[in-house]
Image (cartoon, rainbow, N blue to C red):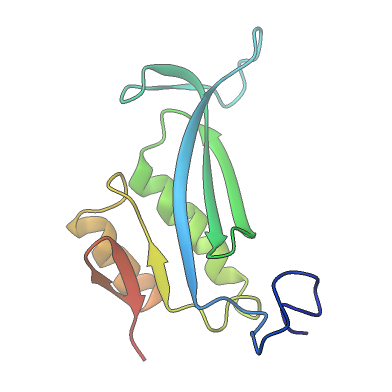
Length: 129
């Protein structure tokens, strides 16, 4: 199935598997009286939960992971990327993961290279063949 057959995008020769994806996180305040999986995000000064999201370049969601807000960007990024990698048939062409400043850094990029076989390039991680 192509992207145009799925109802997204113009009639083009697009593959259903994305070649690039974007990862980001968002901390949200939890509702009153909710105590399960709630933590404190010191960077944003929020008590609540954190959503880690991976989308393709069309904005279509690949994976979402909801955790305690106290989980760091890099650790949450690793968890959500592991889940993306487990969908190997859906992301067989995936070569590049774009990240923002919260996910960059040598330890995270090294993990991406070792686990996913991508190389780091500026604010992104690119797969080697």
